[in-house]
Length: 148
Image (cartoon, rainbow, N blue to C red; front, side):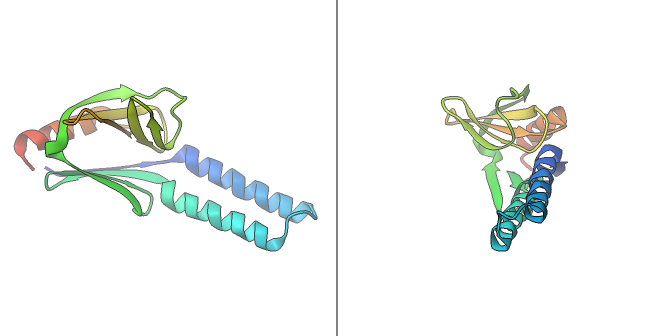
């Protein structure tokens, strides 16, 4: 079985666009920031946008892959390492991006609060933010059961 879904990070995109706009307004209207500083901020916001504008989840060849944006940041999990999977909802305090909640779990999320929580055989938990948690849970369970 093959599964692929990309969730667009509307919150992250909105925040990055706001930072870029404020940077440009400050540069145009104020004498303070220098041109190189403005360019540096705009480049950093562009990099953030490329890295965190979306989260793609794929299941293929007994591996679950999570990939942010253009794919420089990714995680591969062998399906055989997953003990259990369930749909869940993250607290708004968790936020977006990559988060480690000490003693609880790691979260990868770009938008919204819904997630699929994987409990690994070693006890660690990993949450994948998605706008279709039930479909992701079914895809993982099906792929684990069919060995594909």
